[in-house]
Length: 245
Image 1 (cartoon, helix red, strand yellow):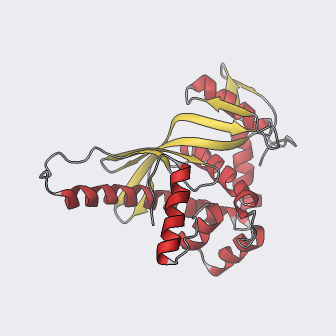
Image 2 (cartoon, rainbow, N blue to C red):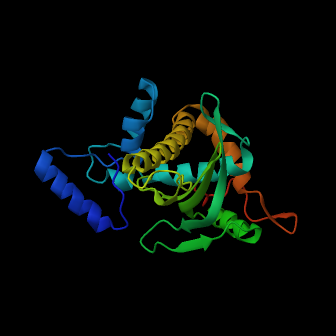
């Protein structure tokens, strides 16, 4: 079930009405629930994930938030260091690019934030913030799937897809053809959410495997340390004890 709104209060109002009317109780598909309910994980990976975060905990959203921080950082790394095209289905590939905004936070009560654009000098600042122990809290991403472009923002809960911009709908629908417009809109939503699920599944496949510590993590730490200003390396080392990875 998808709920689209610009108000978090509206989501709560809708859920209360839905639950009272249908006596059904939807589970919010944030990071862990999304992984367990929407991503095809084999039994070994599901067990590994369940051992890291208990979905029965009343604090599961916050306790599993590290998965969101890590996924957003991994996604940034993939955009800069990964392949140019990513397969999302048979004969269907996509390109992934950073949007215009990155937000990093310092763990703790202060919730200190660093807001960066994707211009080169600001990305330098964002990479330095990673070295200093700040975590990727929010990132705007552009998907280009065949001829369709999608721009949206994810935060570390990996729950709401914010500010989603889909391709312009076709102008040749009859004004009375409301079903056609609705179905096209749903196609766009399914395409972008399906592609996002492919990326999250790919991340979890690495994150929950033994090779995360020995292979993926060292490469990401090396990337984090590659802060350059004027062509010269700068910043901390990959082994900085304050690094989030």
